[in-house]
Length: 132
Image 1 (tube, rainbow, N blue to C red):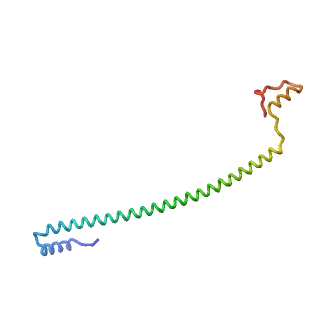
Image 2 (spheres, rainbow, N blue to C red):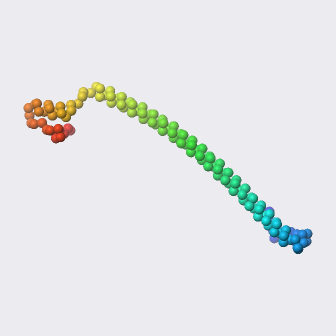
Image 3 (cartoon, helix red, strand yellow):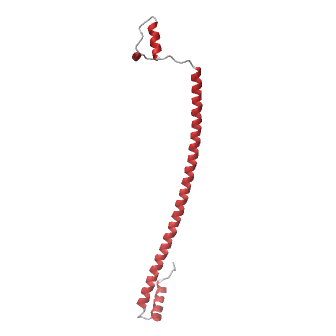
């Protein structure tokens, strides 16, 4: 980060020993170490908070994309639903129109009754009646 070599650090240590003195140097070094640790924790906390904000913004963006996708899917589903309802109505109208024009089909009891009145083989019972 600062690109300080061993020789520069040795020069700073010698100057500090001369200026501060051998009695107070350990206490000053301890205080500088504490300050450096606090500074590292502070920088780490700031980086962590920044990353949280970035992740939070990304989550908000993804949420917005998902909501947009859901809304578009709902619109397309509504369109499909309305088209299917129209087709069902058209088929129902066609069925009612075709059933109104067609002759009513005889029921199985009418077939059995007509078979007993005519000459020929005996008519099958209702449970034996099969239509092809």
